Amino acid sequence: MLSQANNELLTRVEGDAPMGQLIRKWSWIPFAVPGQLKPYEAPLKVRLLGSDYVAWRTPEGKVGFIDQACPHRRVSMALARNEGCVLRCIFHGWAVHADGYVQEAPSHYPDQEEFAARVKVAHYPTFEAGDMVWVYLGGGDPPPRPRLPFTEVPEGHVYTTRTMAYCNYLQGVEGSLDTAHLTWLHRSFIPKLSPRAADGSLRTGNDNPILTASPPRYEIRRTPWGMTAVAMRDNRKGKVHMRASQFIAPFITIIPAYPYGNGNFFAMVPVDDTHHIFFNGFFSLTSKVDENWPDLQTTVGNGRLVKENYAPLLGGTEINFGQDRVAMANGHFTGFPNNLVEEDMVVQVSMGAITDRSKENLSSSDVALVQMRMMMLRALKNDAEGKHPLSPNEGDYIWDDAMPIDQVMAPDEDKDKYLVRQREASVA
Picture 1 (cartoon, rainbow, N blue to C red):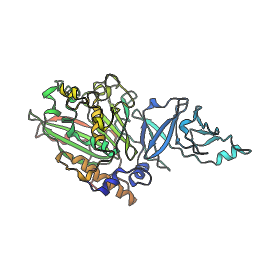
Picture 2: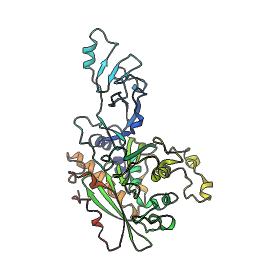
Picture 3: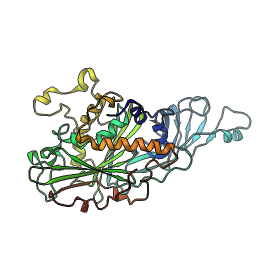
Picture 4: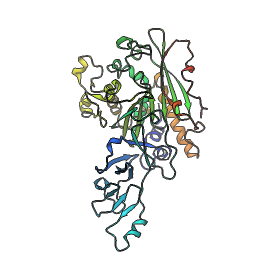
């Protein structure tokens, strides 16, 4: 259970809300997949942390990112002409360059060049990695770019999709850390995922460790990037199934995706108080990842792979989001047979735009999300005291320290030999 006051602290991101301000200066924020930005095409409208922006790609490949309001009369630059390196406002023809300055102010006379040079333009640095485009909104010198397992793989070894989620970002983060729901919410899809064990034997039907094991018990390890959530289940064969997920504060989670690749990652990016962008990606250190990957087909495929908006909700609460009761009668557990992430979207949105956590009754399988909440509240306190948000846990780490792990082992086996890369950090 979380108090209403702490729930507000963790979930509100608009305006002067402490969490929104912290995320701005703490993090690089993914906002698009690269294919959404093409030279000379319409600017992309972007909303993050309750503020509105536009982004576009120049012919040279640079991504410009500026406030949506024109610096002249605040007309939306989403309406602007994309003339390559500049966006030209359709109201008075002002041209804003991707490097963040007014190149032309044709409505001013006679000293146009000098006048334009004095106009300040709010623009923001960007970069591309992990099949996503990232921006830093904090002003001043940005922090180092994130070096994570999915940002360091060779080109073509990561495939990321993007959709809009109609609820607060924290509901997405909590869902990504909740491994217990795999057994129930996704039980119609799980047999299609990771069908082979490490020895090559099939993991289908009653042999799938997620479906046949006991409820998870957690061990949480604080790390320089956030935390490692180690979930262990006893299965029917007398083995222990260990899944170690990585929470990259403040809104990224990496989970195992064995055997097709090294991992599946999620980024739950706050759009405003009641919406977030949900990025879902797969990556491999050793092979290319494309739309033919079975995990991708099951997760977001719906017969064809859609890079953007792959899990739109089919209606609202009055029709239960289009739940298919015929499919349920025919054996589909949830009645949402399109793709796995649609199930996640539906349950998260059904809680309300910002769920009331003061009315929860948490169980033993909720340890990871409770620890995440405590860590994020501590991050706000640390920031208010002028410390790094993860202090004293911040520090250097090798990018593959944050790899997720999927391992079936003997009950008396030392799990630390599989977690050797997960360097323990001191607890705040």
